Length: 562
Image (cartoon, rainbow, N blue to C red; front, side, top):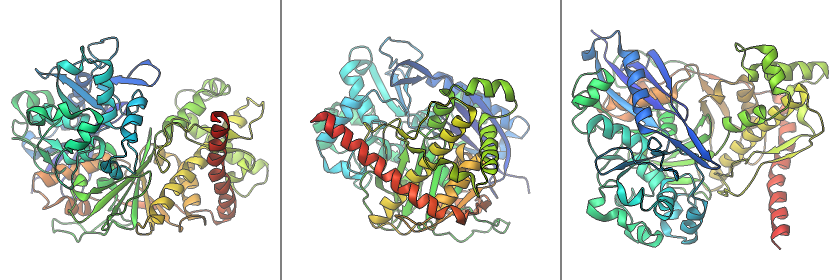
């Protein structure tokens, strides 16, 4: 029988990737990627271009499907970062730049311009905020919309015809349908998915009730779960852009990190049996998905509705295309890979190292090897022990979870005057350890609030391909502390977001009867990262220091404000 394929398109912070995937087993046949432009016109302002992003989507989709029959491609699905796309009433890009740069019509997810607006929203203490851990994040869309209304009213707000989450813009561009994903609007726009409506009292309280006029045309009134078919499939224009057939099924989209959950949460250490039968559905309740790249998201599914301070949700399982009786919690770090890049880029030793190793060796690989050599030369049982006197609190870009405090800042204790490559390696290691402690802290917060004990963490994304990071994470998660030890699994095929999108497309085409069944059938194989038991006591001590550091920062702030 001829193979049936679907396409997953993952729009990340700096690039777009596409994969051609076999519906039967989730096997990726081909991958392509293309860069996208980012503009940083001022501190805390980050912009992109929806036209540039769509062009990149077109490039990668054509590349992965160039050698297969169009009729064998049954569907396509998109995921994207939680960036805000603004179009005028004719559906053309509308600038979000204070300088009016025409191509800059997307506010990137990590843009933190709306700090005053998010403080105003959080001061309302509206009941709806309980679904975002009690405090809305500056990275969500309503603070950004309020900023546009307050600061670019004449040039942007009054001229706007549509406000989209980036994933919804892509399905609109593909199908012409103004339906929105229940995932994007619930998790980033404060749509009340339990009541299936925009909360008028909340929108009035924060001054955005004008978005509810004209049947909510600007922000959407028809919401669909990810994995359901969107509109009538590809329009003639979109099909031409993507090199596919008119009417090809388009799945309702999803946030990129959430796609990672679908593509990884059912992973096992052995591959499920082949064939096209419907596989039994694996319970996800004791598993946590860690999607770690520029930033990091932690996702946990539960059959109980658990509220956790500083953690987003509980959102109905429909945000993942899962049954209504399930609930999703989402924690996160605002800067992880980006923080490591910053630590490396700003150190005096970096330029010399790059010159020495050349373009074919990644600097993190060099640092990982250097740390092992340092441990060996100092006769230490593990490289972990190199940071006994060096400690880090990693919130250089504020705290997303579990403290939900964007004003917190990074801290380092134990610095010297050294500018050597060894000094850089130690700082790099201490930051990685702090990121692992932060993950442990979020898991502890979830479990303390009543979530089922997390027994397994699955990690994907760019950082999960760093051998030192995953080893440190396995060591920290297995050490004693505020939460019970848990194992770490890493998918062998590191493309969870692409597989997650493919799962949605396979569900939308009805190749599989539900998202859950597609997850099980198309799940990747994972390998267990064995922890180093001799580090447990060490990490328990450093974790105590980690927790004390933020308390010290709060004390300093209190002193200065007194």
